[in-house]
Image (cartoon, rainbow, N blue to C red; front, side, top):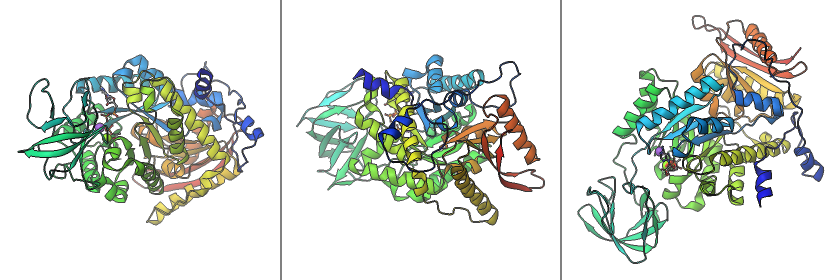
Length: 556
Ligand SMILES: Nc1ncnc2c1ncn2[C@@H]1O[C@H](COP(=O)(O)OP(=O)(O)O)[C@@H](O)[C@H]1O
Ligand SMILES: C=C(OP(=O)(O)O)C(=O)O
Ligand SMILES: [K+]
Ligand SMILES: [Mg+2]
């Protein structure tokens, strides 16, 4: 048992050159998968630090495993009490966390502030590039926090669900957070706790309170979520409530003042929710903060395409989705959302319960590894840990399972040439945008066919990098930008390694020469490496001349 877990947790050495064909899974192929890659030379320690911010984790991975060994799938960790110390955050960053997520449902603002500042300190002092995401609480119906204790509901027992506020516990009485929770609920409806942890039948309604009989016994966990069902269909809830509550707006203000990179909005209902927040952020001069739509309700599924189009990225929030739709529908919904996001060029995070058993145990279940691998095979941009990192005893191990499982599946997908099955419709409408898009289409095609070592792209807002990433190219994409906000926002893009340079010159040849030379000085590219360089940068805001090109550079 231990040795199986051990081999799963050790990083797979990956070959350094891309595979251009789809080899059969012969024993020979399987063996070559485990072949160690040559070690790259280390950075020149005598020279002063060059003006190029290349994160220390990717840089060391590049040295150890070569270009093709760089992981493509991004990893998000929810920070909770189990991993909020500086030392624990540092270990997660070293283990490949690219985004630290703070769930504003839990913890105090002071606590969140402490974590954000710690992440930023580590970025500064240790050369990491970890972005920060806040995740709003949203309006949802749940039991009022019972502290750490959970309650067992026995078959046939009668319970009152009330909005009355009281201290401590009353037998067979559950406080609910939202006054209108019983609106539209009728006798005979089913009250389902946490998507099925326990089920009740509504037997009486007294004012706003519900009297319910337990028909499927189980556990009521702290802050358990409530949903009502009639004849197999969800009974609408919260529809009158805004997506963002007063507390959410306060949390957003807090996020702006702390300089977070992403705001994930819970229980999105339609595209207006996103548009509203995005225009608010622009007015507040915080337009660089990316807004992610969490798909976790029936309403969000009904308006899926519009929501995705309006957002800067999406989270498949399978936890609450499983409360609102039958569980057996979740795999297809995930696949569909992932597919639409790639088509619309929006990064997508697959979230919740990926390695749930690792909250307690040091190894995952085989089913969990299969689930993680399937998300990677679907080319999700990012995978997310929730309780596994926030409260679990094995946060780093869980992260390393994500790292190793995603690395392995990325390699197999490359060997099977799976990215050539991705259909990518034209997105751009105007001619300049269509040119950029075509340049990226062709660049990836060339990069894969020529078997280049890396793609370099110069990008102000990360758009060109995303257009390259959309095709899931074999080589890694090094995205050079002069904006730290853009750099951090690229941390959710599959296969993109964002690198900050002090400024993008108006002379594009100088940018190319300069960055290749800086990367060479650090030992990150070497003589003989082949780099495909894509540029599409408006060189000057006064005269927006655009320099567009694809060049193949043989590093001298
Ligand atoms: N900042 C925090 N403080 C305390 N506990 C947290 C924090 N963040 C997350 N958790 C814990 O981790 C669990 C999983 O996190 P998450 O999936 O984000 O939340 P939830 O289960 O509320 O949807 C939560 O149920 C909660 O117990
Ligand atoms: C990620 C999710 O949201 P939260 O953890 O905030 O409930 C989810 O529901 O899967
Ligand atoms: K949340
Ligand atoms: Mg949720």
